[in-house]
Length: 305
Length: 305
Image (cartoon, rainbow over all chains, first blue to last red):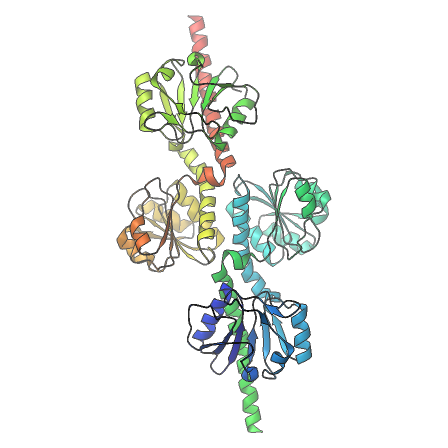
């Protein structure tokens, strides 16, 4: 349970509803800022305005996956008002309060530093990234089926990178019946791919490997699918790049060559907002429980002084 | 090779292009009827009009997957003219000529009977149905991902029937990470599902089994998802019915209960026309090769008389 914890959820999209639902079930006191157009209501939640609300008892601030932009703006689909986070607001919160965000933007890193508050970027966590790879894979399946006139089954699929998403992609595309090859550099990745019954190749060989590729999926956030690589691909190849913006593909060259290349980061929130929200809700619950434990221990200690 | 065989391809969609391409590669003489708007050209093909063409040397007539309707009408996306097949045309073809269609409609059965020509319904063949289950599964994946806000992975998926599509669906949804149960009646199907590491149940238990289903996929062409079954489903359930029209679901009741139910037969031609066309082209090539062999043997025999 999270009884005794005061948490502000500021802005967000459908994913945040799963977070609010879970925190409500666990009896946290939840302040909703930027939710004036939210239809459903949850026990223990209180809609507040940024300007009127006094954050002095806040233990935690939960921001959307996108965090806050360079000027502090927070996205919310549940309000038509603009939401801006600022130093003054953060500095008034409890001294041990924590800012939870999906991405830790520059603005957030700076404001956390200035106000001496802890900032936790959920998407940086390995567990969140691995759980998120599940909806990501299904998003890539969707894009692949929509963008080709042939089946994934029997197709030559190249996956670049064996990180948290690469491994999930390799497993599922292999299971569906594609002829999968995975391009990596590390010898231990070569070993893992081989153990999975899939064919590995070294990324230095990428140019040679793409000559008969039907679907090329990139997870590496560096320029890897260069014009030289694209020049070797058949014209019917579809490139799906899920690396964070700007991706790892020379999109301009792909377009000039008439090769279909899609930049598709952030798939979980698009194809499965409910699942993506539950992933965040689960990890937030664990983190807030620990925070509450520490808080209670601290209060006990202070009491005994 | 199919050298010496005269084949008329009458109407169709993108799938028929794969058939034409393959027959052209194998040196058949190909008469295209209902293709006046076809842009690409293939060696050995001749565009003809229904009324002007004399079919006296035709060894085979290839119709689209949909065959011909009750009045003989043939669908074609490559012409704006109406195409009607009639008894007179068929009766003028070679005596041993064969009519190949996807579906054997009443009209075709009757016309083949009257003209004493052989009619082969490709979709009735087990091999074609099994190959077609591959694009069908990918179509169901597409519909599932599009129609839910949660992932297939971790969802409770019920598949009804373990026929040629049911088996493929069970394998892929299980591999992606869904919690799959398959409803069947035959004990050997129960055994096969268990062997696959999946949970079987008897269809008599369907009402009890659907109480926590997220996605229900039907392959059985009888009323099986009745109003009584739907009444036990959670409101968020998505039903995807791929049985041939009118499907096996009480769609009216599902709509009244606010449950999303989709009738989706014919997925291969929609999600992967190229693959679906290749499946038809491969089996047609085999059948036409055998036909040519028989024809040549017959001609030799006649010569020796």
